[in-house]
Image 1 (tube, rainbow, N blue to C red):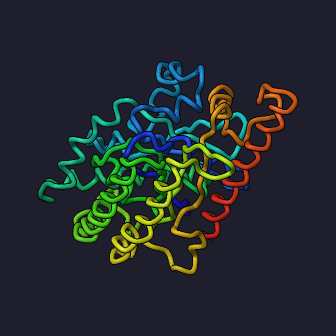
Image 2: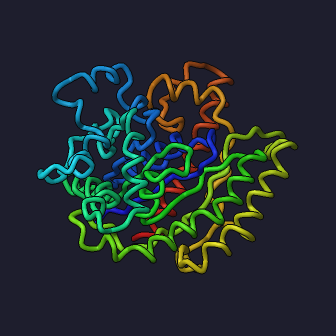
Length: 338
């Protein structure tokens, strides 16, 4: 059975998409079949995968309905036809990595989904909507023998994000050291437990739906702190205190808030201090090369660094450090579930 992991923070600019790609790619490198879900209407993950084929993908009759929005359409349109597994894109340089493409109009489904989450269950047709995403992901995962599903969402608190959170087995909070991220982390300590309480209170209303909402608890994997500069081998002055504050809030506010809802693994499984999986510095020029070649920064070849001599040596050292960091995160996730 696949394990679904949501990369979630309602604060934008924290590298959710990049982190989804980097962790998913590494899990695939380690021999796992991985499905990335692009549930962000901006479709940045899809664009990264498809590159120059992005526009033609949505024009081509063979592929234009192979996306998350059209995948759940039978439930939202009340179609007598069931949800079916859809065809996914496999990355040309990582045969174990697949993508369920996004759709720029995915947010159109939010009005119906909001009604489904709040209206009287006398409207029985609404019962199918929240579980439709889970059904689509499970059927597509079965088609490709997927081990891990990583879900990328937009920076918001809308009903699609709520449902994707509630159908996931675990979640990671990407962060960066700034004041607004600290505010967001504080608010998540209230929002995410309330979502889990809603599910426990209302799960019976969806249990007999054609697309049932799974009776599971989404558990906290950890945070990733990233996008900061370093000086003399450590985080530069303006970032150091903010990194410490993110760690403190996670440990002293967020974790105590989610504990009553059983949203933690057994404490013996947590091996990172303050639940921080890694502190990942700014990619700088490696990020530009990553965008150019459509691979993670750590998967760039020596030639793709486009430098020679001392500059290339420095870039190789940074690349290899990022490789070690994401390798550790991926192996940590695997030991949580296996």
